[in-house]
Picture (tube, rainbow, N blue to C red):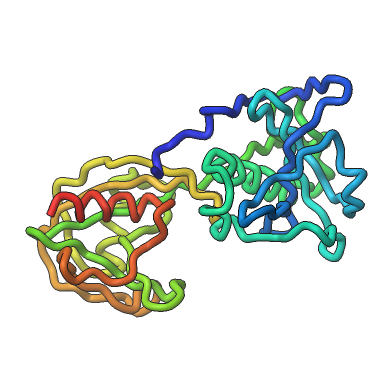
Length: 276
């Protein structure tokens, strides 16, 4: 499931080409939550020609392209201007409530609107940035610096030791959730270097036979999650007690609470479960 593409019903279109009376899909965010209409336990995007009828306080808006052959936009609104018949949800909570293609596209929309919000001014000279035509980019009119949308590459690894898989509890996790070892790639590293370093830093193990598994856009930290599998080579589990508070080898008959189904972590764990 993590490998599904946003491009089934979505087409990138940098310049809007609205038709008279044409309705659009609206991905409207208030801080980190998406505004939806809830009907019969299903959440739906606002679908209308403009936002006038919602009476929201608009901060910014950007054209995304076309979904189901209709225009789609992302917007940010101020808190306190939520229509009474609509609700705000975190993206993770909408996984089971919205069409899966909408869920994927909402991740893209979330990253673009946050990039827009955090790149209003030039990071080199402080001038107000201008839009670049026909690109999702901004340019400084004073020093010429161009900023494009950013993603941060991260690696996540399923580590196997015979018929067992290594699972760890992060200090950032809620409850008793356990998942795979993951972390951001550092400057100068290859993806495989990042795999080895993260595993050594967080649980004190060396691994071998590192193999690519797949990737997933991960909007919650504006990252691209790149999945790998690896085999245990040497070492004893020694957690860092900073990012990781506990880690152990688990077999299929003794698995802890696992990540959500929409994550590449769960997809990789499910492959292990099906294998054994």
